[in-house]
Image 1 (spheres, rainbow, N blue to C red):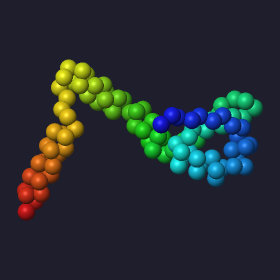
Image 2 (cartoon, rainbow, N blue to C red):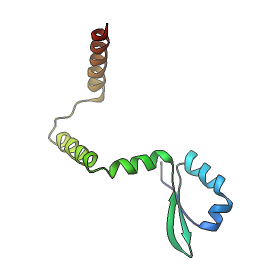
Image 3 (tube, helix red, strand yellow):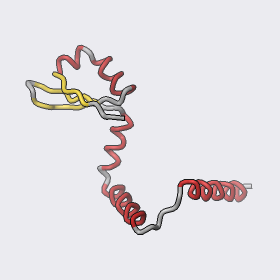
Image 4 (tube, rainbow, N blue to C red):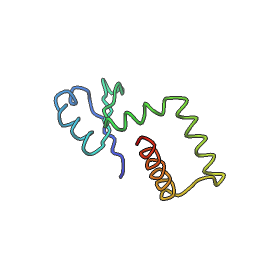
Amino acid sequence: MKTIVHRIPITKARINLGQVVRRAHTNREYFILEKDGIPVAGVLNVDDMEDFLELQDPALKDQIKRSYQEYRRGRARSASKFLTELRRSAKRAKRAKR
């Protein structure tokens, strides 16, 4: 899905705030709000905002980097194998609770 970025004056955004928020939420469009032609703020879907904030965490960035390096070294496993391991682990944990 292609990301759509709109640049609009802050006054227009204020008048059409409901529509701007709906489009950001449902269509995952981005809006850059401008005052006198200068970008001052942005409106985006909350999921995208949370992703952005997570990536600001240095520990998370480091974890992503380490994971990518392991992948490049061939130390990755398929999604189906990973899910099988998770299911087995969950079954063991469930049995241990009994």
